[in-house]
Image (tube, rainbow, N blue to C red; front, side):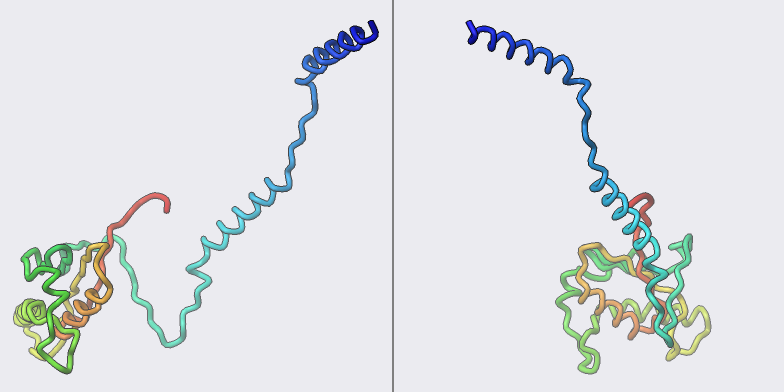
Length: 179
């Protein structure tokens, strides 16, 4: 009989424990929460001032960016599947990447692109009555596909410089919102 009382007592204690389970105090460990919040604030403050923390080396004049400049005022060189100048196809991008320079002094030169850019530069010089050996002040905006290789971009910029353009800019699409 002592065994039955023990079982009954154990069952009663189990019911009572279940009844009062909702009143049991729970612990909330605040240390990891505070550490996480401090880390978030630290990274937010350091990334917000990254531009201000980078010192400008003396003797270097950084270019200025103007928001809202009309892209239609610039001569545009597009590099996607085709290399286009002012909306006119010049050559295939693969051909541009494989083109060999015909000038041993300028190994990066792309001859067909050079001819097209030189013709545009000459027409700008004629319109502005500038000497033929003077660089063109008209801006040349390069719109490159995001998959374009940097070595091709370097060759295109060198070709534009050799053709007489000194005011080059790289255009990107403006994205609003978070990172």
